[in-house]
Amino acid sequence: MARYLDRRDAGRRLAVLLAPFKGGNTVVLGLPRGGVIVAAECAEALGAPLDVLVARKIGAPHQPEYAIGAVAPGGIVLLDDDAIAALALAPGFLDGAVAEATAEMARRETLYRDGRSALAVSGRTAIVVDDGLATGFTAAAALASLRRLDPERLVFAAPVCAPASGKRLDVADEVICARTPLMFRAVGEWYDRFDQTTDEEVIGCLRAARHLRSAAEG
Image (tube, rainbow, N blue to C red; front, side, top):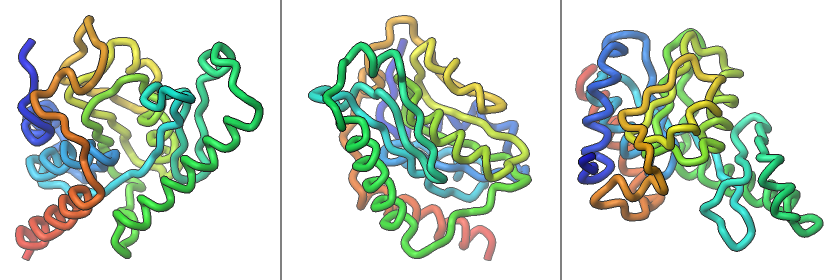
């Protein structure tokens, strides 16, 4: 199965699957950091506004890429009880990890929003986009947070997903995965270029999307 060149290539290909939402009352929200780059391509193809939805993974000790939970706006905290029990975490680790993730989420939200309010999603189709779905905890927390804002339809979309992880996203009305390879080990394996996305890239991407939409409307 061919890999994506980079996140922008993945976004353009994913946008083809999202074409039915073009022209409707749709808003696209990217999960930072890398998901914002993918989401920007989808938003441009759909002619939809782009926003950021900041959620934050809680990683296992000494293995931060392995998610044992996630936090999202509105006080959402999702935890993998089975993984936590198996890890036999040190006392106080989980409370500290949740507090740290919540603080980092707040920092990023302030930074990325650039003084702007979040786009309204009530009564709209909200498409949440990430660059890939591994455990699914961050996406599940983000969707739970967004569901509270009463979108008419809530969709999650990603270029590549672990086959079983989509089941964790039952809060969504629809889950669209361009690829669900049986031999899935990591999201980055499905990209030729999967460099770490910086805060500056996320901010630049969001600003460019606003300018592009303003030009189209003006």
